[in-house]
Image 1 (cartoon, rainbow, N blue to C red):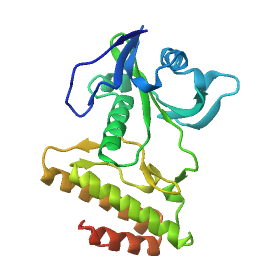
Image 2: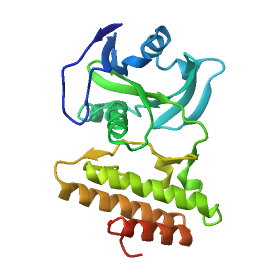
Image 3: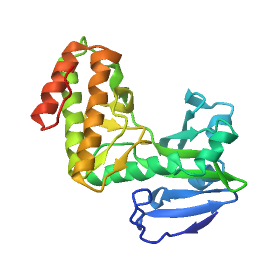
Image 4: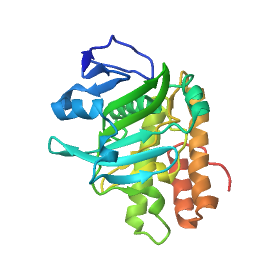
Length: 256
């Protein structure tokens, strides 16, 4: 595996630094955090589909778009998220888009830098076939005691609801200060643990050039969040609490 250290790129998708290494092996390439460097990680980067194909594979999720598998090495557990390619037309579209794995890695890194809890990225891998982007893999540290925020309902413990909404709002405030929006702010894309709310699925995340652009994007995020509790999965109490805490934080909340 050839390892190269990248230049100081400043665009949203790379945000590389001295702690991130670039690598390439055959038709695969990507980046990984140098602190995770080990023979076992290097093997995983060369063969990122191994966690899905071993006899005792622990598959967390699989559908036409993505698959998640749990793996362990160096005394820790990690999740490998594979982004599939549906067909040749999908592959052609990928040629004009940034890798989803790369984007999730970059924005997870950015969120960590600005203090918003997110997945802890380890590496991303991009496959190319005949010069076109094919599958990609995003590797991150497994989170213990995670619970999707969509499991909350009006019958949940009030203290748990209040904590989740408080942490979610705090995350949005930090994102507003750094001109970042999520792009798909709905409970299935948040993990609630005992002490924080973790943002996941960063495919639609953007870092904006102006506060005005960011405010418009965050307004859409909040609208999506409220629509979940008002109509997708109606929970009147959570809806009312969400509206109150978001307005108190200075966000506009659409009328029901």
